[in-house]
Amino acid sequence: MNIAVFDLETNGMAGSSVLSASSIVFDDGGTILDVFNRFYLPLERPDPYAERVHGLTPGRLLALREHLDIPSYFVEDWPDLIEFWEARDVEGVVVHNLSFDTAFLPEIAQGAFLWWCSMKGLTAYCAIPKRPGSTRGAGTFKWPKLGEVTDVVCDGPNALEPPKATEDVENEIGEGVSHVSLSDCFALYRVVSRIAKHRGDLLQFAPFVTLFRAPRVVEKRAFPDVFTRTGITRPRDDFVMDILAYERKLRSVARSASARRVTRT
Image (cartoon, rainbow, N blue to C red; front, side):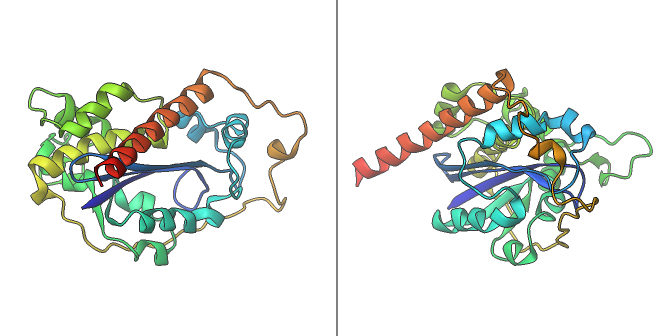
């Protein structure tokens, strides 16, 4: 079974623009098959709060897009993501906080795949108590953040043993970078490959469709001035370079796995 993990960074809440979209496809033995990682510009004014979370400033987005020949906006490029999954025979897509991320995909795209929410699907497994008065979660347990799930499943005292392929990749890749979608996808890959090996019964893929909320251009101007000014700084700082290096390492892992499959056949 081929599984995809999927994550986005956005310019705010549902109804805003997608700034990066990432996916890692792997088989149920933990072998990474391919990587999708793209960056986009917002249709509305950049959100400073969102920037503080993920660090994707206008200049960094332009720098990260320099090697990409893709549309400027995710709303124009999402069919490529769907084709990417279809071409790699993905049978199920895993998202942490499924209802949030899928709201950035049109309903026709959502309906093309089966989905599993690792946040809700692993709530009882992680068994993290709610804070007094909290209503977020199921029963007495809170919905765990991705970092909390990773701690329980991968790194804590009761961590699950990874598949050999996952262990090899973890040793080669090392730590993730910042709070960006590709790094979060790798964390989710670590979790899901272990769950697939030891607790496959928890991976309950099912149809899921939520209301698509297309980004709205708040201002009448067609494109924010910050992106059209000549001479805007496109920093090749450590943030940008680390993301590019991290992507290269993951793609190298996928190419090596592909070469081994070809050799065996």
